[in-house]
Amino acid sequence: MVNTGIHDTECCRIPEVVQREYSDLIAVPESVLEVRFSAFVTNSDVRVETWNDLKPYSVGTMTGWKILVKNIRLVQPREYFVFDSAQAMFRMLDMGRLEVAMID
Image (cartoon, rainbow, N blue to C red; front, side, top):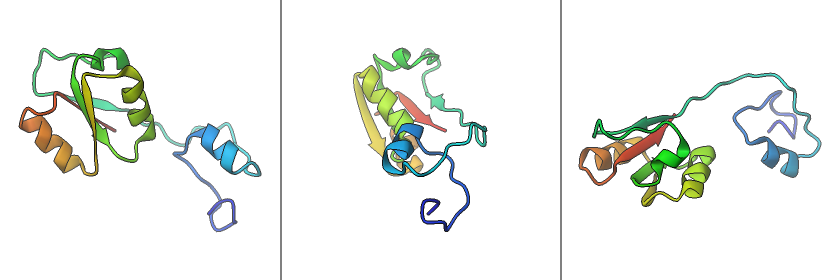
């Protein structure tokens, strides 16, 4: 929509994708948003401070968060799931079928 002039600005996109697909848009080096990702667990022994800490666990995240999905796949945890809803993800966490739930 920015590319066609409908909107004036865009945020929350991966810069490499925008540059590749919309070469006529100009990125302005200004921070407009900061997102922090959180790891939710039911077992207090599970500590997640780096991406690699996810390796031994069953991990879930949400569809649409490409940064989370990409980094979780790169780490290659024991298993991972991408959910369509936070409610489904947290239900799996509560049932013990998931050890770590990642979301913004």
